[in-house]
Amino acid sequence: MASIGFIGLGLMGQPMAANLVKAGYRVAGFDLAAANLKNAGDKGVTTGASAADVVRAADVVVTMLPAGKDTLAVWGGGIMEAAKPGTLFIDSSTIDVGSARAAHELADKSGMLSLDAPVSGGVGGAEAGTLTFMCGGTAAAFEKAKPVLEAMGKRIVHCGDAGAGQSAKICNNMILGISMIGVCEAFALAEKLGLSHQALFDVASTSSGQCWSLTSYCPVPGPVPAAPSNRDYKPGFSSALMLKDLKLAQEAAAASGASTPLGAAAAQLYGMHNAWGEGGADFSAIIHLLRGKGVKS
Image (tube, rainbow, N blue to C red; front, side, top):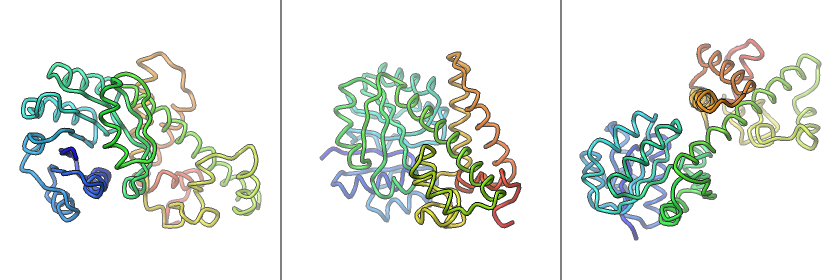
């Protein structure tokens, strides 16, 4: 089995690395937070003293970091020089397309294979090993990465060349943010009209209003027991992260000249929701903003 270097052991990275261990890979991990290192160590990950330390013996390096500047700082901060020639670098962070392409350039100049492979599925998917990976890079990099990604995910899609994975991710999450707002607006209206949550769900879930935001992540308690709305909106995917992705989509739209008026409106509404103090709640909690009532109201 290949040796894996894993950098970024937060809420997503930690269960992803643990699933690689379960699959039989030798995993060495690094994170700036001592608590994350300890928790990963408890799950079988060998912890290193630095990012460079964990890549030296690695065949594949996976990074899971907060933003494009972090990916570029790590990829350009000496780990390419520390790694073996031909090491495959996979960035599963959700970052802007420009930074993703710049990361590929860093790898290419160092003679390394690279893949941008952001994920969909949230913390629950990371823990269950059911993530979707959206991959951008060469066919050779994708084929080498596929067995590793399959240990952490259920669906692995090659979307195209460098940056295509990030492009697919931000387009998908723009759809998700827009659709969740639409579903929340419908429930808020139904409440004003005296229609029960269950009645609206029973109709819309089997009619033309059906969508993932309704049938898998219903923003009101009851109809979908596994949805965060039944757990006081404890996040599977936080409102803050949704805002981050919607902003990335707007940056890409501006750079490419695309018209995304609904995406812009969704970004504005999630900005208000975060400013209102619910950035740490699940993104489906935006129904509180539309009602004008907070989580505890």
